[in-house]
Length: 370
Image 1 (tube, helix red, strand yellow):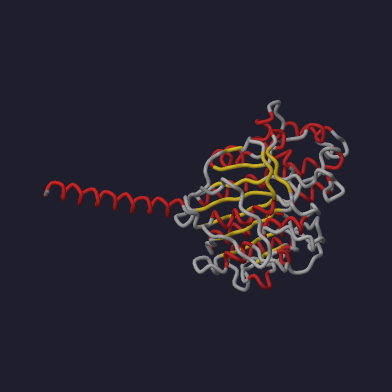
Image 2: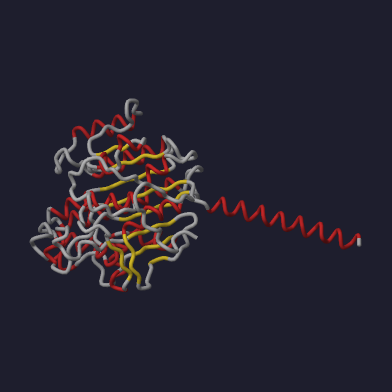
């Protein structure tokens, strides 16, 4: 009897240890931070297939520099081409996370909204709701609740949310007046009323910079370094960064610049991820989401410069994520149909929350979060 009691007692201890160990592992796998990155109007065609040879050869689009484009981005093999263009996306993100949207193998991601341009797309990404009332880039403050605003209301995250966007309209898209977190967009000054020395330098360069997009949008380099400084100094739990040059150069018909802008965004994401993985607060506790607001034309090659409901394939987009609780499945190759309105709840679930608001919210993407 004594022996049986000792065996029973030992089994109870072992079971308790296993339960505690399991709880520690679960906590370690939970994402405590999330970095959400978008690059405006970047096509799935380049994301999954790399440089488009037809566009690179076209004198209307190659900026009289096809030799540069070929030297930097061309390879006979499609997988090599896409990795030349988006090295981090394919060498790290694809191996450690999940990437959706390669339509050549039937894996489809689309806008749910019917407009296929920026404000409706960003609203859909951030609110999980394809609101048909948001039908203009000049729409005023967003009446819908974003997942960023929702997360900022959570006790463990409140005051630790920040957003940086090259496009000035993000003040309205994210409803900065109501949301309760800083939205630094276009030519807003970095650091608020008390910028540090790095932020002062960024602000001075921003004010004196070349402004190809006038006052509506700054160059991505300023958005990037402003966001990176925020990451280093204020250590947000939730950080959103929106780059814009992929869309601007595409509208201009500058294919070389469009590719360069995408390539630079990929390099900047690597820089952010390298910092994250070498910082105790973020290392192995941070998720990364990468996507776009809309697609562009491709069926008619000359329509690659455009998007909107008149361009029949401009709703075709993509989505990528990696981090704690996100299984490393790589490029998703099964036939499937996902929609942009699923992104918001997916991001909330990655952080361990269920996104709720006074408007419809689509369910998360199945299988992203373990």
